[in-house]
Length: 534
Image 1: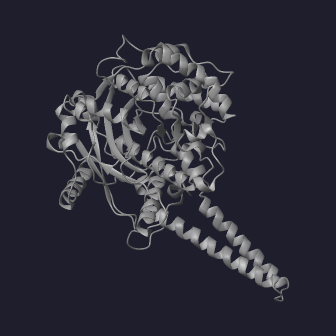
Image 2 (image 1 turned 180 degrees about the vertical axis):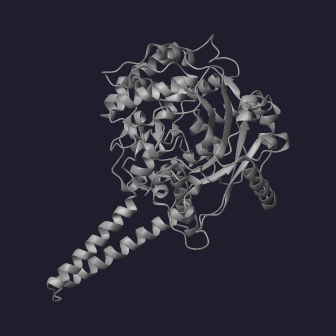
């Protein structure tokens, strides 16, 4: 079974933001891809967020993004280690506590959810990193140390951006750190395709349509990927396998780190009935008062058992059918037996499918799910997790000039089991004190799912048809620029077509971020990108 792991999440707030700035910028610039997650002050009208018309959904999302704010921002930077086995990554995770400097709405339901899962509003109002929303104000986005300039560094890095059910997250990021949201969805997607030329990836879409998992809410998808990866490593099967390393944070840097512990996936003691609502969607309207189990480990193991039972029944059915064809006598009784078997199989398939593509009554939906970008499916906070060891290979010329935070990050590494055990013990204590739901850790889980899907894609390359030249330059090409839409069979495509134009504010912003020459190149590439995708 998968071993327990510990993830170090660096807490960033106003009193250490400048100190940690060089390390954050370096992590972004040297990453292979970046995952982001947000905590929001509210979402507004939930029913409107699931409107039949995608354009109507977008209008509702715009209203929420303009009137509400990002309270916390999680950033997970995964850097591929070329000197290590394939699919080895050095991971750095940051959890930024933010405070919007302008008036914004905050919903009691969202406050209740966040407080229940460890969010500290006293800390936010006392130490949140300030930011202003909307358009650029006085060049602050391109110079100095601010959240908006950190987002500019993210754009300049031109790395793949990974989210989980990320449409709402992208709208809030755009409105809070980039510019005023455009009025039309086609303009918004055109802008995004130019802002992130390396592509936008949605792990909820990947979980359902690439990994074909039984459920796709964040905690389930992450734990299932981690379990499958660990089984492959322990079995010594054909790789590549996902391998994760972390920096060790010593000295005063250790006071900024919140360790997230995740035990191995294992069934809880005793027989427990699984909550079918939570099993399917990752949340339950009864919350902690529900009498059934919300244990994700139990849910995953039961899903696997159902899958194996279904395969066994299908095999027995094929064997009986082959026997009858081989000359065994059969009459009406055999046909009746086959009909009953087929009915049982259909019932099990319904149970296993978890009604994943059905929408629920809006009155039953949670006020804010586990990661704000998923108003239907991602609720209960993920358990904390992961540990690895390794050193941070930062360039000497950077660390020599950097703040103590970066220097310590370079020189420290986990080298023995004793240090790991001590970190895990301290991690358990911090987890109990700080709650379980964090944007930083959610970003880590999102990135892990993506990294695992990329490893599987590389493994299957030999079995698939040849990739086009365009696909060869992309990671996970089947999920490139596809964002999950709740209740829809097709994703939202992030493209700029010949029928849509970029917004004027975005065009001006592009010149400020990249300079006129590069901005012109990216703008011209938009229509060609659409042509290649058709």
